[in-house]
Length: 280
Ligand code: GUN
Image (cartoon, rainbow, N blue to C red; front, side, top):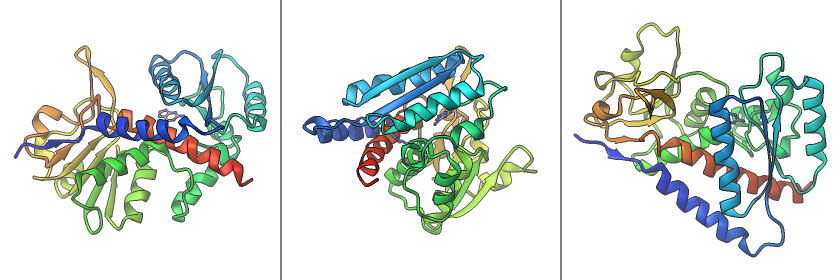
């Protein structure tokens, strides 16, 4: 079997062009604040993409590049100011933050209706209780890509590798909500292959280049690769794409899979945040 490639870029482009036409004639533009602290090269690339996409779609965007030594208090003050600005409907603070800053505190200082990342405790709690309004963009991207394969989620064995608060846990919750039987594997899981081989849906989000090999994947599985790693001078995922595609039924490429979809979902969340602001 050779897997069908799930073209995340193509699906994302369609969503972005729909968003663009939706707001083209509207008086109000969705506004997004992008906050980058320090100069982590990967974070800079992600924020550049987000800013570029805002401009392409016609959203209003303000970017804040802050010194890596900024104090927690000054960062809190900035977020407080952004919380008050009516033309900024969404606020995104790119993670990770420098060690001296408490990420949890900063994330939770964003007003819930502006939390386009869906990382505040309230948004994550809403996700747990199946009342998500603004769900994390990467998790939404993963679910969208799985659904695009058309093989269904209900009753399927879904295995998520990685238990981060921003990807693994939200993805697992969303799959559970869709009635999959969900297993989360992580760095202390005894024999991950034992689980992955039973997965009809396999989501990998660990940040280890080509960790998932062909013999770990069930024939016909839907494989979603969230990893973005640099190896051998190129960008590769957490899945050994060239070999795994021989057994999987559907697979996302890296680049061109989850990455562009995540940005499309962030833009959708920003539009949702603008709608929410009208109700407050
Ligand atoms: N760092 C890695 N992924 C993300 C994301 O989706 N949002 C933010 N804010 N930071 C990240």
